[in-house]
Length: 501
Image 1 (cartoon, rainbow, N blue to C red):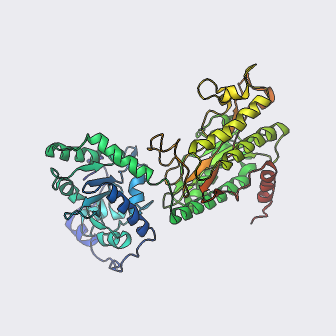
Image 2: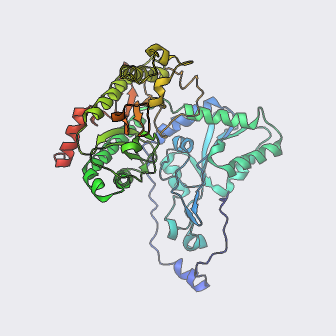
Image 3: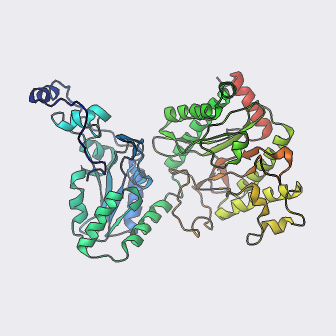
């Protein structure tokens, strides 16, 4: 398979004489022939593939990594493999673009053979070695060999050029499913094979969606290795937040401070992991009332609150997702504290609902009731509206003006993980040990909100933690990051004084 970005005539002055080719192919030290050690994640990935094999016996399953995406002209965005591919191979930030995992049914009907198709390291006597700006070792570094992949992951490995033959093999007798969203070109090739075979037990789109939904849902409960990765991501995120706290005075001084804060966190994310798990929200003052404020173009001012929603993604692609609302000068005003403590009370109620046997939706219901009660007590709801009336899901909802989002989502390799699940399995699903999710209520009073009290306007608060469902309740994995108003003030003072160094 080749990329959609076709090779074009280039303006580059690439040397091409026979003498040069002979010269550049010679004089290199021998490559190591030592086997690559088996990856720690390989056994976990094998168990995941076994579960998929059991669910789809006798079918050919195609899970692409995806390809590079053009940023501008001949430059690409940093590559990140499709999550299903990363989950089933164990490859993360080191995945190769255009790779495809195929679970090929064994002829005797006993499970699947896992085969990773990719573009392996080219020999030094090839033009690709020095002249190919997209794949060449001189340009983008060495790729693994076939033997490297097989040794590291415990799967079969083949050159990507042989993928079409594998897809077409026995196509008339074998149902094929593909994760369509991962790679349009691979999906089109699978559709061509299906059309040529003129067979399909069900509609191709339905079959593919069923596969994608299963792969999304199987990530909902994490094993011990995954929980360990999440702990590491959260610890790295904690470091990133402390770098922000140290840099708050400079963010005020420099101007356009939201970008300064974003850059500080991005530095830690890139150093400790693969990068940020999503575009960081670094929202000061009224910008905190835009729930997904990622422009980060504003000033950071003394006296403002700054809402920071950010997470480090590790090389394994597991990401944290944490929000803290910090007083820029280190101290909450009386009004800021009043709103902050209301949100914290809502978060505590939501966390208390995180336990096996409860529904996922119980988390939002618990936090939402506190938010509604606070707003009712403050006299913000329309005259005559009772607490129970606003909490009526069909005919109420006035309090949602100040918190329009939900309180929780699943978390893992995707910041909003397992999103392909149906409502009955997600919102109405039962909480089980091993699930990791967020609890993140907020209150948002926009500067131009004439319904809100004048002293509330321009204040936005969200508090978000990453919570593991345990056998008898829950564990707040991000509990080391202070949450109460007093503890946040002490945290800022301690970190800025250098006491944690």
